[in-house]
Image (cartoon, helix red, strand yellow):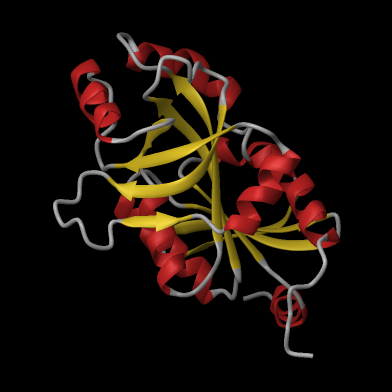
Length: 232
């Protein structure tokens, strides 16, 4: 790890930012001070208004997301933000809707125990205050949910708002088991119904970086929160 970033990590919070594809970093791609490749992933060191961050482009899928999350934790991040896009599983979740994760589920995992992870309540509240949006379930699977029948089956299994993605629950599980708080925000590219694949292609360019673009404001907001340290 870069000596400056390592020193910052020892002194304060270093935020990890994880996405699947480069476009999902939005304007953060231009804010990086140094990029490097490590463990098959692209890492980007960021300075966001005095707050240190390390972004990782994981690639698509749960295995790559879990590996990227583990890499970020090994680099010393002590909170994890997951950003990107998703597919809406309710008709009112139209393209452009921002959805905050409350619970992430490995929806294609047959074992029920341990397949759900809950977002950190403080991160969720701060991110909602910074950029209001819907809150719900993130249903993560290794296959994109493009079939209308598969979307209906998933939607019927969970109450409230829910979206489909391919990374969140895997990265969240790694963070949760390491005791690192995490949060996730995604923008809907395609809504429930027919034509999911074509809707994704149309809306992805405009929606890809919207969640990541909220991170600088979130970090400023988190920096203003009073300390919860009870040691004194």
